Length: 395
Ligand code: FES
Image (tube, rainbow, N blue to C red; front, top):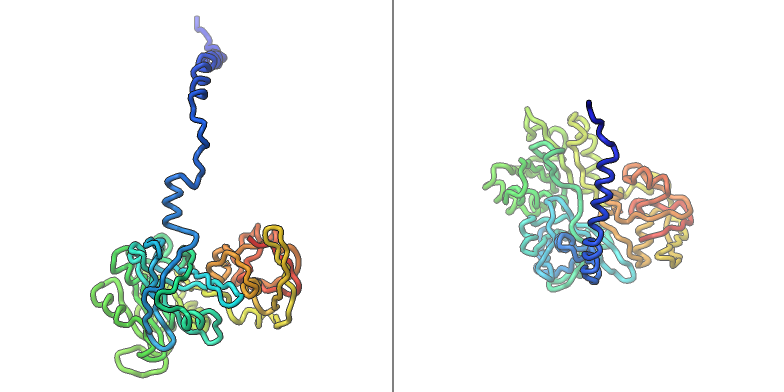
């Protein structure tokens, strides 16, 4: 005769075993230390993460070199000798106090990731005609000065899973810095790709870092640089503006390639149409955004009418003045109100704030908000324009 298994037998066994284990468990509890459990900040893994990505870094201006007119290279050394690591193509966002304003500006790192291991970063700053911060840095940062920067950020990096093995880099003016970092990283074997750099400038004397770029190109077969002069017919260079024809001339004929671009807004406007004619896949095209387009407010018909921006910060209310043709972030900075800021182009989400009431304008091109954020009235002040009086909640 077949005996049926009792479905409750294992349950009874478990119950009995639990009862038998109770005295031991009570004993363990009695013996346990009464010390408070470790806070997450004390976990070793979190300590390592904080060391690699500190919230703020104090850097000392170690050396200043004049590259070309009104374009200077700053060597910065971490005060504690430990600079946060980064990937070639990323930027450092600096927090700078100018008068009553508290501004944040991002500058691509020109040095190699390996330099960061030795506590060093290099950035290059070019004077912008109506720039508030670039002029301040060029005129005020001296050797020995202490400056503060957030940990490196940015998505303008080479990703082997997304990008083609060959990248056509297009640099205009100060947009050369992330490519210099990438060329160095290739040379030091921390990045593995082929970089063909088309570097545009007005004349030969406007080409910054030329000796360094030539040296790497000479010694490393994975990096090539082509100089393109727009206002000179000097021999040994390409001439005109960098467009589809020049890209096709230097790109591999029978393999995929990515196009990475970094430079002034005018270059992007021209290049976007040119790159479209190449018919390459969208994922292979990357333009490094540097703030919202200067034309955004004008194109949207926003005037320089003043408005009231009520800012709620940790329960405290403050009223400041804004302008319809300036971003909400500009109003906050002018009033000296600190908000976490990195990219200034709507991408990173660090400045995310809640729009409590009022109407705003956000251009599609810089609206990187998550769908839920857009639905629940969260904004990125760096790319949001007030259309009248508004109230926002920050931090
Ligand atoms: S600073 Fe990056 S989204 Fe505003």
